[in-house]
Length: 252
View: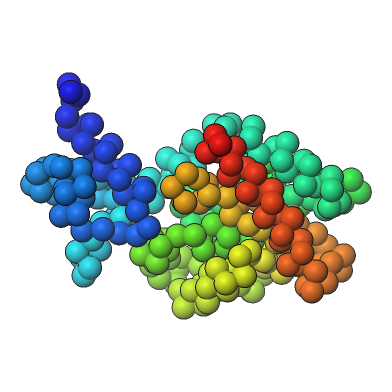
């Protein structure tokens, strides 16, 4: 038995929430973990105060908060994903001849952790360590599309959350919902001039063992190099790289 049961139970709650497809009632958490409801409510209140859990009062449910995603992103920035993703991305870039990157979610932004520039291709804004609004980037959209609706809404509560770079891209939650719905239907995300005019990107999300977004892999190219009709074929190749990185993350 743990000598610090409160810490042990807090971590059990977070792990349990991480494995769910959306927010769940406190009673369901208590039942699944065989904990007293009063204990679960007390621990959830602390987690809510610190941003690790979100409470949805109308639905009487709890889900992971932004601070939990920041921890996940911090892990990603401490090398494991970079080390695993770099050779996969390098092989993809060599095969396609266009530049690529791996990015992770950090709040409403994506942070680029790996970049591979193809020979004779211009430098992009996606250097390692750069942050960009996730709703404007292909990588970010691929990752946002894997989140439950409640988590997505929590990240974008109002119009102030929608940063603008070129005038293009979603400016409201309703528009963002349309974007992520299209991503889910297609199986990949795109961006066409929303970050840098004249450049487009195609991206696919990388999922961890619980199905949550671990990273996004994207290929970025001058818009004139590849017509939109060829983007699905490119996305299929990016998807193969994403599946391989997902497999390596799971250790399978």
